[in-house]
Structures are given as C-alpha cells and as structure tokens.
Image 1 (cartoon, rainbow, N blue to C red):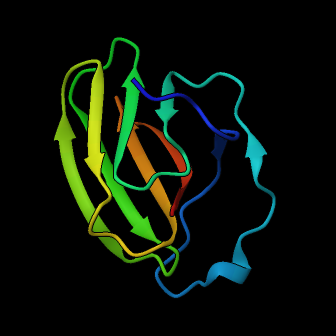
Image 2 (tube, rainbow, N blue to C red; image 1 turned 60 degrees about the horizontal axis):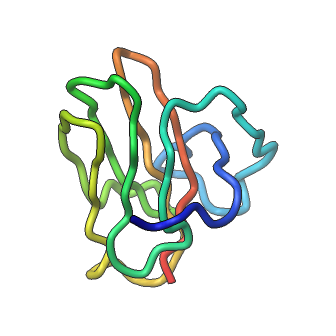
Image 3 (cartoon, one colour; image 1 turned 90 degrees about the vertical axis):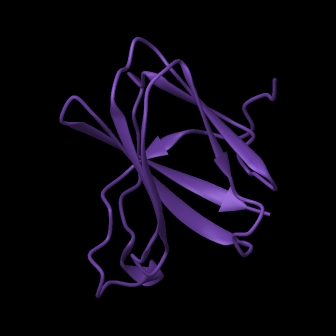
Amino acid sequence: MGHVIGMITSFNILPHNSNYNDIKDVKENKKEKFLICQNPVSDILKIKNINCKNVELSVYDMQGKLVSKGNYNGNVISINFTSFKKDLYIIKINDDNKINNYKINKI
C-alpha cells in the first residue's frame, strides 16, 4: 500500500470554458470519507473509501475536459494514471448524490 503525500483538498469543478487561472478559494474538507494514496501520482492512484457502494468517479484535466469515468463498488478504487500527461487533474467522486472533488498531481 502507498502512503498519503500532501494535503487532500476539495473544491468545485470548473466549467468547460474556464481555465486554470479561474481556480480560487481552495478549502480543506476535514470530514472526508475518501483517502487518496500516492498524490502526487506517477502510475496507480488508489482511493480508499469507507462503506461506499456504486461510486461514480470522473477525472477531468485542468481545462475541464473529461478524461476518464467509471462506476465502482468496494473499499479500494484504483485508477491507472500511466498514460496521462504530467499535469494537474480533478477527480470528482459522486457517492449517494454527495460530490467530493480532489486535485491530483500527475508526475
């Protein structure tokens, strides 16, 4: 298992016509039920969740373009970032209509 590097943050997804400079007011979310392992990530990102079923997960680049999407069940979600270019990404996790957003750094 990997370990957590850096701080998990939560913020809103940018509209498709927004750009990186539009990101403001990143806030900590102290009551997260997801643990992001290996952020920054170079290959496999693992997301551990607590009692989640039918989680919808989407990955967006910083221009707001959807680059990956899937539905998951279980306690650990693995996302392969190997083919992604080095950049920042937003992961949007929809769990029982509660949306959590995370900034991920691909190195």
